[in-house]
Length: 254
Image (cartoon, rainbow, N blue to C red; front, top):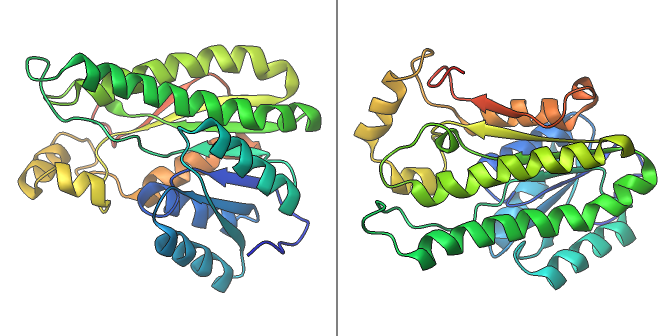
């Protein structure tokens, strides 16, 4: 769908064909944004997300791109610009694959590769949308992080280290882009249920153990995370930038 009405902020959500990304896309659309559902290979799932938004009265389109590919990212943003205008809200959610291994087991290619690809994707996506945001004097950038950046867990050194780098990157970008009316924040969930990737990594018993460690007695759902993302993607957070916001039910309290 590319004939979206010319109203509402234009929001691009990467990795939005399932899980947290899909939940964010549906919520932002329900709040009046024109949503672009990015996907890498799950075309049918992305189309399903778009269809669910449209059937609920929202506006959405799906665009394919591997966020690690510079030319693909550039082409995606140009396609969005030609169809509906400049991206005003970027939610960078796409999860780059990573090894679940201890430090003893992991190789530098696995750890360094995850770090490089994580930062490359965030860098490319940010570079692609900032010129349009600067031109319009408005922008919201939200990166998806993880509680593992501050609360290590066995086997998660690759994910936790790369997302920690992302949080520091966000602070530098926030400082530089603030004068242009662009805010940059990170939403860092704890364990999230109801997602294919997480359920493949965490067994049910382990999820129950994680839930027992939270003050609220459960792990997050994609909708829990989406509501936090929507806050930082909207105007109510206009004077908040450069922070990493935990969404973990009280598992970690700083």
